[in-house]
Amino acid sequence: MSMPPADISDSAAISAQAAVHHQYLLGLQLMVAMREGPATVGDWMFRLFRRLHEEKFLSSFGKLGLKGLPDAVACARYHTLSNAIGGVPVEYMQESDRKAWVRFRYPRWMYDGPTLCGMPVEAGRGFLRGWYAHNGVSLGNPRLGFVCVSEDMTGQFGFCGYFREYDRELAEDERLMFAPDERPPPFDPDQQPVAPKADWSERRLAKANRNYAVAFVRNGIRELAGTIGAVAALEYGRRAARLTGLQQYRRMADAVGGVDGGPQEAVEFLAAMFRGMDDGVEVGDVGDGAVCLHQTGLRIVRALTGLERETLLACWIELWRGAVASHRQFMEVEVGAEDSSLLWTIRPE
Image (cartoon, rainbow, N blue to C red):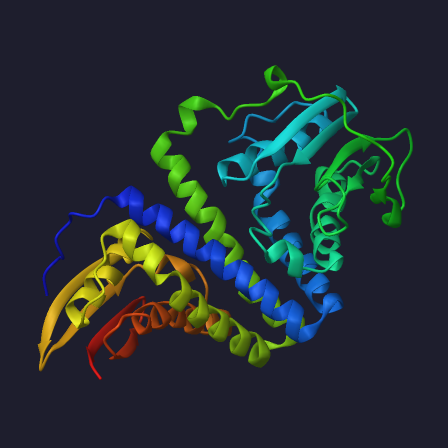
């Protein structure tokens, strides 16, 4: 096998991976909301954001320069900075050391495009309970809560609220409260927090944007299985992945210089995209018009084992089967798993 020509910029492939994983997440959310209903998607979002919170929240404080700040201020700055790194516009307004606001601006990343019109309010409240209501618990501060003043799916002015440290300990059902008549203070651009420049180069930001989207997919599939069972999660995950690959192929190909051709062109497209995951790729001819690609690293399932790994990988493979199926020429795609690698073989149908 030999390496494909490295004439596709890494940054374009990294950005394309961020975009396609984002679109996959949106499609999967809509599919689950439509098939399983509002309560189920709310439970799923609660589980997903609680897992993300436990994995990311405290471990990121040092990287974002938040240690030593008052808890309410640190939480609001955390959400402003971490979302900005993922390409999500959030504004920060501080009233005091004990009260600080966040306002997410449109377009909303989590419900991009018309997805916003198809999501039930339970989805937004699931992530509020899963993450925002748990900040005080994680920080060991039982007086810290979150007050939501506006939500996305209610037709107000978008997701907005504030972290507040009260004079007393909060009961569990008081960690998240709603006050729809309140409004944030005026926006001050000079007050916006900025990530430490020494630690966040342009290339690192691009990869962080990709990893942000990929983390939602990795954890989303795992928590969907915990919500509706592994069999149903696999069914929805594979179907949404294939549809996303079909729908998004043209945009991905345009980004990485892909050509709508036969097996050779399809493999070159996959190789370019997989480099955007920092996976290893080698391409070789098989004969009879077939071309193979050996993919190593498999960032998408890194550190996962057992059924979680098998389910996620099966879904992710369908994403690329869909992209190949979007070509004008009909092709067969065979995928063999070898430890921490995949062997893709594409031949004319």
